[in-house]
Length: 239
Image (tube, rainbow, N blue to C red; front, side):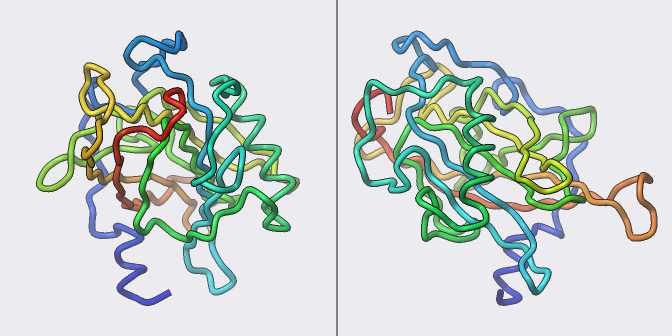
């Protein structure tokens, strides 16, 4: 990984946020209705998984996975919405069956570069390392915080965030977080339309112990990817 790419990938110069996030933009805010019709009511038919890990050179890298087809461009089954509470089990299945052999759900994309979303979807981040963890929500920490201002919009699409642990077959479970990308262009829940493209930037907050101080205060590190929501959501409308 080139030094400039690493600098872009890991936002080491950013300040760890201690400010509370407005609930209107907070990824932990509950928006889902699960009725298929109301604003924030369409149930996702697909799931993006971003497996963050350190490569053999001890540099951060990200692998992309897409469920259920392994191909973002293929039509999705309109009769097969994914229940919110089933996401951790699906991620665990993919982690055990695919992380080792790069099976059918893996996408060719790598790292947090040029991310585009065309589906109402679940978005999941896994830190595949026994020591690194996604920060839990608290007074001074969040797993994911969106950064508004300039060319980037405030968050009005990614909500319903939740933490869980993933059994990858290793002795220690991995830290994970998922949320729903509702593909909405305002906090009112109206969906993106043809020609709409929302540019967003967000910070992923992680913690890792200092060397020789296991159990003591942890170092906080921020990854700062970005991407685009491109409207309208790809048919079927529920997807």
